[in-house]
Length: 215
Ligand SMILES: [Zn+2]
Image 1 (cartoon, rainbow, N blue to C red):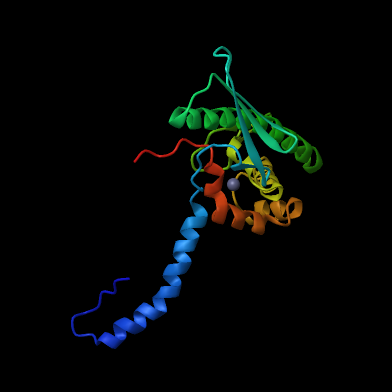
Image 2 (cartoon, rainbow, N blue to C red):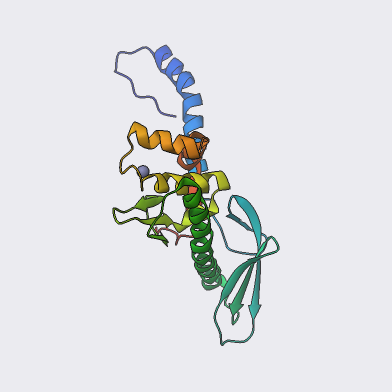
């Protein structure tokens, strides 16, 4: 660690500062690692979460060159079948892409089901519930009653998913984040604080299926 001080500051001050700050630096590094999605190679035995539970990957390659890559969640495992037998970077990229397509599709159903169940109980009526591939938000609610969710949220634990669903449905009644809005969220999702904290701390994990950023 480097400590920069005014030229005439005694060395003991530098040592004291380094000691005081070491813990802070360690904590910040740990936080940064928690926010960065783990490096994945998209091979057998790695795991990918769905609704907060980790499921192992089982990748098989069919020799048939025709057909499409396919991925599905069956009996607690992600079954990925590749057409042909690609290797190396192509194989990893195709496993990721097949899982991404599957998750987007599953998220549309999962979030649609949760939103309609909650909307009924909350006595609100979205005109449409859909998913989008937002980069920096978890959902949106439009003036005409359309509600969209970031499909990646379906990878998060259920209480987090339900918080995002509840949050957007409350916007059908209150367009802003006023005290009345927050009271409505509190009524239907008392654990909203924990969910929001989870998103702040672990939100980046939900980007697991995104294309890795170029170097
Ligand atoms: Zn909002």
